[in-house]
Image (cartoon, rainbow, N blue to C red; front, top):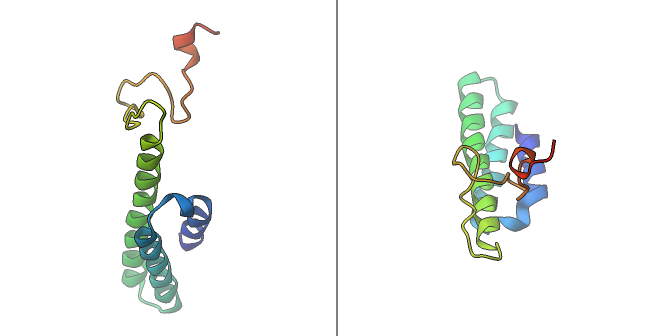
Length: 99
């Protein structure tokens, strides 16, 4: 989990706030410290905290991507909301009529 969080920071670190980046780095350190010990509960707790924080990276990066759209839309047409495009802005083939 710590490695995955580090990779995520490398990929989108410039798209998130400095405070969130620092929080993720702190949670990564907490997981690594917990892994050095033998308390399984502490490891699980630290990993859960890190996972919740990493999820916020996606939320923040996605919301910032939505605010930079040319039409000023918030990017709220995500999965399950009835939007007509996927995350990359592509229209599904079923809506275009391409088989």
